[in-house]
Amino acid sequence: MTALAVRGGRVLDPSRQLDAVADLVISDGRVVAVGPDAGRDATEAVDASGLLVLPGLVDIHCHLREPGFEHKETIETGTLAAARGGFTTVCCMPNTEPPLDTPALLRWLRERAEQVGHVRVLPIACVSRGRQGRELADLAELAEAGAVAFSDDGDPVADPALLRRALEYASALGLPIIEHCEEKSLSDGGAVHEGWVATRLGLRGIPAAAEEAAVARALALAAETGGRLHIAHISAAGAVELLRWAKARGAAVTAEATPHHLCLTHEAVLGNGEAPGGLAYDTNAKVNPPLRARADAAACALALAEGVIDCVATDHAPHAVEDKLCEFDLAAFGISGLETALALCLSLVHEGRLALERLVEAMTIGPVRALGLDRHLPGVGTLAVGAPGDVTIVDPTQEWTVDPERFASKGKNTPLAGRRLRGKVVCTIYGGKTVWRE
Ligand code: DOR
Image (cartoon, rainbow, N blue to C red; front, side):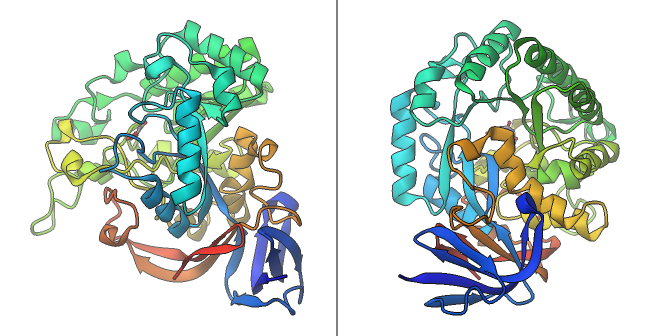
């Protein structure tokens, strides 16, 4: 039998408090051994000495844009971007055209991902029919067709009565509702965080209260129904406080933060206007929820370190050049994030604000537990014997400059262009197959 060995790296698997220099062996698509010299007799080997060997990273929030917006991204390009970013499992959001609100569409998507995907794709289905927020989609049939969660992401489930019913139904199916927490009456027309940058640029702001009010509402409904609530892309310090309060009372709620909300602030919107030929503003920093103030980002990073925020998710939102090369108000919301996620988050580790083990946890077993993905795929997000043979190898010292033109993603929309980052994914193995190697 052929076996692939990853030899001599620092194997870090927070699900089992494993942190040791060891070999890891994959055969028949599964982890078969981890230990010193375990890979001695393998037929094929990757030398990982001096490198980190992690469970394949898991992203529970990305936009692959297919069907309907193939000019922005496809399952093929999005999953290659995932592989380059070290992700072996991604959950894709249903704000496609048509939206993923029928079992037939979900089955089509899963088949397509089997054919052209470079990594595993698990679909998230709509909460409401057509993502219109009026009536519930057929949640039970969507679960049957492979949905791992439900969300109208891109928009909130604006009607609290519908959100309440969705939480009740989904909890009967054992699946979470992922809520994009935004009170539209407060945010509509806004383009950036309501703060000094908005004032300076003369743009309408999105107040933190738009998120806080929606988080409070969702938490109340989750408590009332006992439904499993997962809060998408939390960004405001006040929302983090509400989450902390709810968890202290034992609520069955989880939350994710994006690398950009953890590491960037609304000042990024100012672009590099001081530089010759520089922009007066950078639409690549326009994202929903908006990049917020330093205190908000710090509150998110602290909550991630403490485990109050359960995991990191990219909210990879690729857009075409023309969606961003326009007036700020007209530009699309979103950041192409799969290929910079790990390195950007590592900056928190380099700054001493986040333990490396905790970051790895938040990008592997953390997201798996948040959505209960191990129910569908035992062992995913771990390097336990019998787990899927998904491994990410990282050079923690390598420095590199972000060049969006070199992204595998069609979405070149990142505010990080030209930025130096430290820590690079050098090899991604999915199901025992090398899907990316530098
Ligand atoms: O910035 C964003 N872009 N936020 C969202 O919630 C949706 C996403 C998209 O689909 O482009």
